[in-house]
Structure formats: C-alpha cells, structure tokens
Image (cartoon, rainbow, N blue to C red):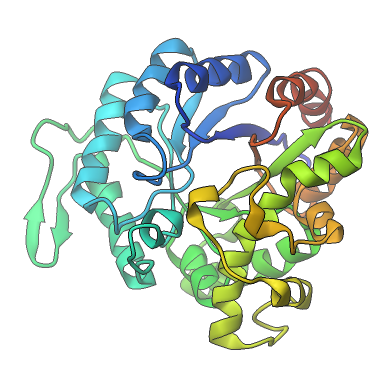
Length: 342
C-alpha cells in the first residue's frame, strides 16, 4: 500500500541519571519537531519512568509520552491503568501506551516474559480503567471511582516480531511496534498483522504502524556502526527466542535475522541498550545497516520515505549514542520537514 500522509516522529530515551538531563533532551526534541517522547520501562535497570513522564509533560507543551515498552509482568495491570489515567487527568490527551511481553524488565530479575494471553487481558483492562469503564479482573468487576467516563481512550500499541505476537497485534492492538528499520522485514511482519486484522473483522488501516530504531546522522559510518551495534544484540534476544521456538523456518523467522544470531554467545542485561555493549561484538556491519538508520541526512530521508510508503505512520528514534543533540538537530532541520513535505 502506498501512503502519502505525514509521518510523525518520536524519540526514545533511556532514563539514566541525572533525570534533569533526560527531561532536557525531551524539551530539546519537542523544539526540533518531535511529537512523542518514549522512555525505557525496566524498573531496576533504570529509574521509574512514570515519575519522569510527569516532569516531561510539565516542561513541554504538546509532546505525548509513553513507555517503550511496558509489560503486565512487572506492574499490576490495575496499577498501569491508574498510572495512565492519572497522567491524562493532569495533561489530557498526551499519554500513549506501548506494551510487550517483557524482556529486560523481567529477565533481569530472573523471570520469564509474560504470555500473550496475559498481554491481551492487560490491554483490555488498561483501556477500560483509563476510560472510566468497568474492567473484568477474572470475574471481579473494577473501575476507577475518581475517573469519569468522558470518552477518553488510551491507544495501546504492542511490540511484536514472531507469528503469534503479530497475530495478537492484528486482532487486539491499536498499534503495531516493530523495533527495527528493515523494509523487507517490515513488509513480512506487517502483512501478518494485516491478515490477522482482516480475519478478525477489523480494518487493517486503523492499526497505527510504528517503527522504532536507532538513528545517527553523520558521515563517519564506521563510528556510527560501532555506536549502534548494541541494537543488533537487543533485537537478537527476541530473534533467539523465535529460533529456539520455530527453528530457522523462513516463513516464521526471516533468514537474515536467524543467520546473524548464530554467533551470539550470551547477553548481560546490565549493558542493555548501551553503546559499547561487549555482548554485541558478534553483530556484523550489514545487520547494523539494515536494522538502524545511519549516514547523512539524505540517507535517513530516503529510508524513511520507503518505510512510510510501506505503511509506517510513526518513526521513533532510539537516541543511545554519542551525538544526541546533533541527531535531534539534523532531524529537526532536515529529516522531519522532508517527510512532512511529501
């Protein structure tokens, strides 16, 4: 499907101390034309994102905020419903929810990711509580008494790679989060989402498509690749799970992904999402180029236009490298205007 509508932009930050720096980056991003600020939600590895969201909302004027991503394992789903409702009561219409089964947040504390069934239940409960409606908690009906039913709705996006998770997106989620920027893999995954939506009787075009990937604007490709190699390791965790479940079946795991993780030796979550992660040296340059967006601004514009033509509505930049302000400036001055002009 060819799309001509504008693409919106977000920035994904690690909530590393000092928190004032995180808030300042969000303010800079809004000034550069970014519409959303997302924070990692791994409650032990990093400080509490929902506290930081309130500070970002207070310092900005229009920017939406949300976790990239939260999960129903480390947070009770009624707590999540109340958190989102509280933020919305203070700053109406500026809250988003991106969910997953849980990777770093759960694995770091020795727990397994949640089931897809638990994730579907969480989406339903969080939406209902946020909107002031009753939610069914396994036979117990609960609503937030201070939250009036005003018609406000919380979009819940779901992060997915594998066939079963993609099916869940198509049947139950408001948005699809794909954490990599490879057009061919996007086509493969998005088709699965659309097929599931049609089978469920939903309009596939009503599902927001969000691609999240590291972006670094500049001319020194070798340096950029070294700075962004961590992402291949992060994605490799999810692909490793898929290969363990399905084997190297290209209909379920794209061959290019299955091939590179053969060299994976392990993963220490204390280095998760950080440049220089020693557990990601196995990631080849070609994978970095496919999964990320790098090079001069013109290369970013070209790749993002291709992603937009395939159905991407929102692109969120993982900003974990050594030139955060430079990339925000380049996007604000060159990339975002080009994607919004057509």
